[in-house]
Amino acid sequence: QITLKESGPTLVKPTQTLTLTCTFSGFSLSATGVGVGWVRQPPGKALEWLALIYWDDDKRYSPSLKSRLTITKDTSRNQVVLTMTSMDPVDTATYYCAHRAYYNMPFDSWGQGTLVTVTS
Amino acid sequence: QSALTQPASVSGSPGQSITVSCTGTSSDVGGYNYVSWYQQHPGEAPKLMIYEVSNRPSGVSTRFSGSKSGNTASLTISGLQAEDEADYYCESYTSSSTWVFGGGTKLTVL
Image (cartoon, chains in turn red, orange):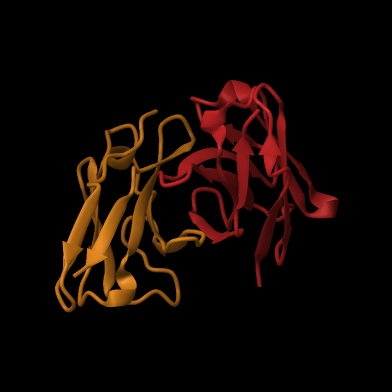
């Protein structure tokens, strides 16, 4: 059974850097083709694709947010970390991490999400 | 990359069929067969319903089906049930080697 859980601060001040951790179980991020990604959803709005890291450390970023995002993995600890710099109130959203079983396959398992509010 | 275009809302009565469209470009929907659909109930994480345009994951009702023509993908739900009331999002692979979601469609079961 695959599970994922997001953790990190619930409140962030404008201009600060957000660091979120996705801790997972039920799969290995060293298995061929496997990926873990991040998606966010502002309150009442649509999903937005953010970033993805593959088993071989191949990283993909949303073109519109690429300059602000960094995704890394710690395979031994079953964790993926997303950092987002220069936080702004418009970045207030629920942030989800999710599992991809193989390269271009979809997100088949999702975490519960964590709400991050950006406010001074 | 811009979000894929979906209607803001659709509605139907129990037992009826509805279709949700997802329009992109030749750089995303039209260029690849990596289109997925997700269902999201309020307060919950999205759930995968369709992948690779028309494939259903194990456990998803056969009432859900997907298709694609040119730059537009479609999700059809037949035999509409009250539990189908939710938000639906399409997702496509893009020529930037990333993915993009649609703006979401709220399905109301009348």
